[in-house]
Length: 443
Image (tube, rainbow, N blue to C red; front, side):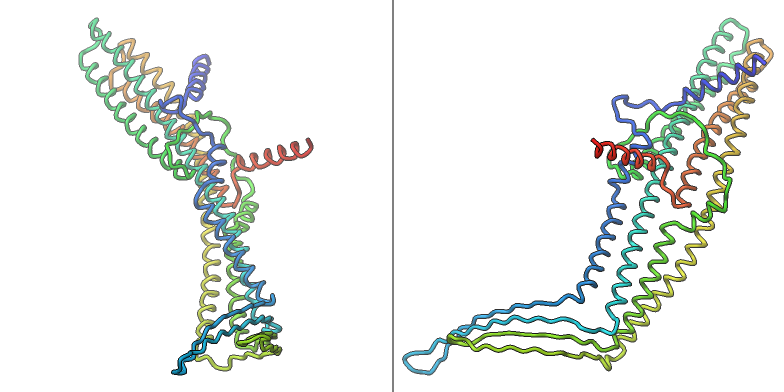
């Protein structure tokens, strides 16, 4: 019983001691909240999505301006020389000014469908922006946990190397007093060299993970992650039907539906372009070469009806129908993708949680085996191969434990993305910000 308690305490100490790789203490260490806050305010993809929304809104305003009256004002001045062949040539100045007003009275519904198409496009762009926000947040969260995972593995490899080096010092003492053969030193040095190689590889993977995090955040400079704490793992999946409902309400799917509506309205609008357009206009002008100028005004109603334009309109309608069919098939394909992503995300989370539980037990067993192997070796009953195997298994178990733990966090972040949810850390920030604004307004 005492031995199990000792193993449990050693494991707890190990979990508490896992921290980041050796790096400059003066460098800023980013937390997950800081990464989310920066990335969701400054990432270029989010700014592009916001620009697309503003562009679609401008197009909508253009369609609304279709019914507004037009006011045109024109003015001109002209000097003309009359060459009569005589001693004096006549110079004549003339001016012309006019003001005109026009307004569309009836267009057989063409603009109404253009406006519906533009309005659906705005909604689609807004859904795309929300989807971009979710994608960026999920990528930041997964990249952050991947960086912390790599950082933890560096610490595991460093502690493994320290263990082999201590064992080497112990073996050198045994060989010096003659209780062990010189071969044991050679074997211990090989173990130290192998541990150094693994540490170098782990540090390289950490650099790659940090570079990926900087890209996910949208940061051009170098980034470091804060020291982490292994706390509770994500909860297991309970209500799959609820997750499915959330997944099929993702902004991405909503955007696809809006694009279908926009394409459908576009087809209907083009069909109405074959209908007549009625407009009213009025014009007042004054012109001449001498004062008072000649003045005149006119007013009327015009009818414009394109009876035949070759295959131009028909070709436009066919192209719009093709876009409508493409949007519909794209929506159905997206539903298949979402369904597959949901199943994969659920499976990934369940697998990571099961591996985490299994590796927790494996670490305790490997720790016990290494403790026994070291005791046998110190008593002169064991051999270098036995203790090396025990150390390798212990290092592998600790590495698998760290990998499984962060894999569960990464899988949970992926499930949030698939179900169209922003990270809980970002939602907490939004709530705190709203509460702070409310307190400031009360003051």
